[in-house]
Length: 351
Picture (tube, rainbow, N blue to C red):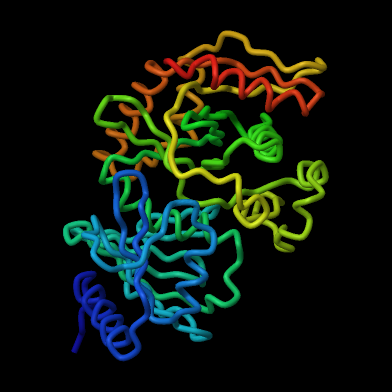
């Protein structure tokens, strides 16, 4: 007799029941994350997994009592046991993000390499997942798994990804947007080392406010750096992961290196497109909005869900039209860059 494989709903219900059984038997304090206007309840079956998940977060974290969450993420610690095989072939794969996806009705099943398997039920606002060996979680997986897991919910609630770094001062922020190698990470690290605030690197979240302004919202304090960039900041040496990403970069949790330089939210005052020059001093120049938008769309928009992609595209197009944009012509005197960024933020503080 031929038996059909279980459907996504059955697998989701099985995992949810597994979590509840373990959580009820040995309850672990839940955490509530404030990510922009969203409250996220995060529950785990072991304290170790809870600590590992909270380690890289740049958003405010509270205890789990008394808050009504917009969605919940429940994760089971498998310790050293491997993730189970799925009964279906993936519909989408990404070698860069090490993910495979299968969607069926309201359920999105995502496997993140050999580390994390999640099933999202977007109708219920709930994700349940299995985590392999969290004690040895590589830093690169925070951005490639935890961010993606949370973002699948956040993007349905008005938060949008932008491929840009974000630097803040006194409640204002600039986005540093550009292709890889343009100087985004070096610019951001130079500013943070000089006392400005970190809000995001590469995977930065934006949200429109009730007053139609646009805020940048912090989530992770992780970033990838090249050996050349890391050499300019010797204080980071002890925080760098020995492992490298597929691009050859090393990872770091910036909140551990600069704990007093984190911010949770700030109003976006400008978008800067960096360009490395052979000049000494850093200056600003007019930017082409269409060219900047083209780069942002290519690196920021996930096209697999048509409706969500359309919302994302429209949001980014409106943001580039609404926010002042400039070319940031980077000079060789890196110590001048924080001064230029601070002056931009102060000059546009009334914008």
